[in-house]
Structures are given as C-alpha cells and as structure tokens.
Length: 159
Length: 285
Image 1: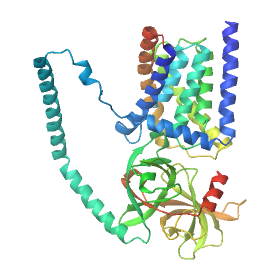
Image 2 (image 1 turned 90 degrees about the vertical axis):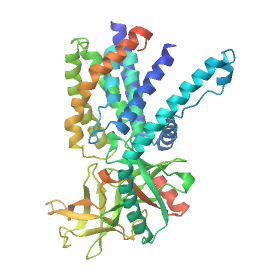
Image 3 (image 1 turned 180 degrees about the vertical axis):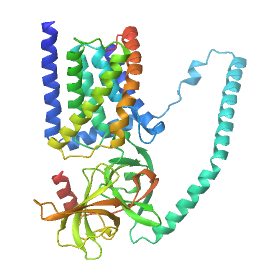
Image 4 (image 1 turned 45 degrees about the horizontal axis):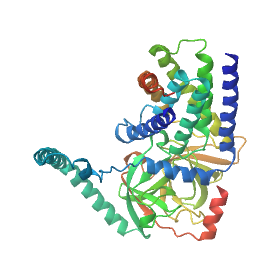
C-alpha cells in the first residue's frame, strides 16, 4: 500500500511541477518542485529510500528536458547522499536549516549539472535569470514541501 | 548504524552507476519511448462514471431531481462564468485574430508548404531549449520538419521538430545548446555554423578570418545544410569577436530572427527528407 502511495506522490510531484510551469510561471521562473521533493525525501527518508527518490525524481526531470538523459538522476542521487551525510551532523528538520540547505544545494546542483554537461554532452550556458532566482524560490518551496511530505509520512507511512 | 551506512554506500554506488550508464550509452530510443508514456500521463482526461445510474438506483425520484437541479444550476453557473470570461477576452481574441491574419497572409507568400501550430507548453527548466506545439503526426508533422516563426513581418528560423506524438510535437529550438544550423552570410555568401547557447542569443562559428563580417549582417540558412530549407532568415550579427591567437577563424554573436519569448504560433514546413538521409541523421545521434 505504501509503495503505491509513494508512486502516487512521485507522479503528483512531477505533474505538479509541470502544472506550475504551465500556469504559474513568472518570467519563466518556477520553484523546482522536483529538486525540492528530492531534498525533502533525503531529509525525511532512510538512506536507501532517499537515494532511490533522488534517482527517480532525477529521471523524471531528465524526461521533462531535452538534454542529456541521466544527468539529473546522477545529480539528485549524489545530493541525496550528501544530505544523508549532512543530517548526521546538522539538524535538518528546522525550516531555517532546510532553507539554507536548499539555497546552497540548488547552486551546487546547477554547477554539478553544468559540469556533467561539459563531460557528457557539450557546455551549455546557464540562464543567469534561473541561476540567480531559482535557488531562492527553491528555498521557499522546500520547507512547504517538507511539511507536506512529513504529514504524508506520519499519516500514511510514505517515505 | 554501520549497517545503515553500508546500505547507503552501496545504494549511492548502484544508483550513480546506473545514472552514469544512462549518460554514457545511447538510450535515445528507450528515453523517447518513456517520454511518450510520461507525456500521456501528463495529459489526464476526466472520465465521468458510466455506472452513475447503478449508484442512484435506490435513491427516491424527488431527491434525484433535486440533485439534478443542483447539478444543472452548477453547470449553468459555470457557463455564465465562461461567457463572462469570453466576453472579457474578446478584445484579446480580436488582437490575436489580427495577428493570425497577418501571419496567414505572410505564409501564403512563403515558398514552402506546411501547417500552422500553436505553442502550447514551455518547460521552465528548458526555456530556450524546447517547447511543445499542438500539431502532431495526425496532421502530417514529422521529425526534423523545419519550424519557423513570424517576427516583424518576416519569417525566421525557430528550430526543428524533435519528437512527434499523434496530437502534439516537441520542437528543438535553435537556441538549444545542442542545436546548430549551417548558414550563409550576406553579402559574400560565406558559410559558417550557427549554434545555440542555451540563452536567447546564438553563436556564429567557423567564420574565415579574412571575411569582412560586419555587425547587422543577415544570416540565412545555407543550401549546404541538410535539415533546413535554404534562404530562411536565422538572425543578424550583433557583435563580431576578433580572432584569438590560437584560432584561424572568428566568431560572432547573433540575435535570432525569432524571439522565443514572444512566439505564440509557428509554421511547420514539411521537409519530406529522404529516408536514407534521416537514417543517417538518426545514426549520428
């Protein structure tokens, strides 16, 4: 039952990101809900499940794009591992630490993905607008996403 | 704790390895198939239950009528709301009508056959990379068809069809960092390569250093390029960069002829490229 709910939540995150992009994009900017969900799953779930969520959410992001296939999967998997290491040393349950982590990891992920582009595809210029604004939108989205997933976990055992 | 740590370490290695394998090996066909499945899942259709009559079989008639009146009332309210919105958007539609009429006149003057399509979705994460249009294989759209936009009363190259579904298609924009086009430069007719940068601007590469490339020069698609019909406006030279000491060609920034941010309709030119050439293109991927 829990695995079905997890698949539903997984699809809902992807569809939600898609819907937000279509209807609520402001100057082409939207919080990266897939990134936010991967980060929150990494904070809430055990290590194996967190890594699986990171990997599969990354695959979803790869499916939505037209660039190299597997780039986001690798990025979010490594991010989930980094969060697993970090949460043993920091309290990641407070909104402020989530906000800071989302801000920092957004930029780290962008740089890492660009690096993968150089290695596996070809160097692509990073949109300055996205580079400057998206991490802040992500930082706002992550505590909200965390609360949603936390409640789902407590109530239905998801994650 | 150690067991959990081991599990985490093994998991990260496995998932990272799978991701790297996906990056390394040509999975374009599989990815394409899965992309179709995902795209269909993102266009959910609402189904009204066919078993409605079965569920209300024991409900008294007067209550059913009350329910039906309520439903009718709701649907009429929705209709009124819809009509109000349509009334308010009449001026916007009028403006759109004028724009489309102008574009239609323009397309009649074009020497190519094709179909008009509306831009229906842009992915924020891939803003200058791709978008979806509302025409697909049912209207004869095929992979590698040329996509043109109308800007300032003139047709310009926007990109090419990248993925085709029955009712919609995905367009790979020329501004995508993976896109390029062989172009010729006015007035000499020199050939060079225009490449996307992932931003609104394009890059002109491999221009011979002896060419007298000037700012404002028009860049057109070249007959030497396979994918695009020749003579389509690609953009204008914005800035020419001097030759670097280690290169024997110069580069330039190009302002695209079509602004992706204001593009609402596109004209898809049917290319009907020979199968052998398409096969060669697929093999290149």
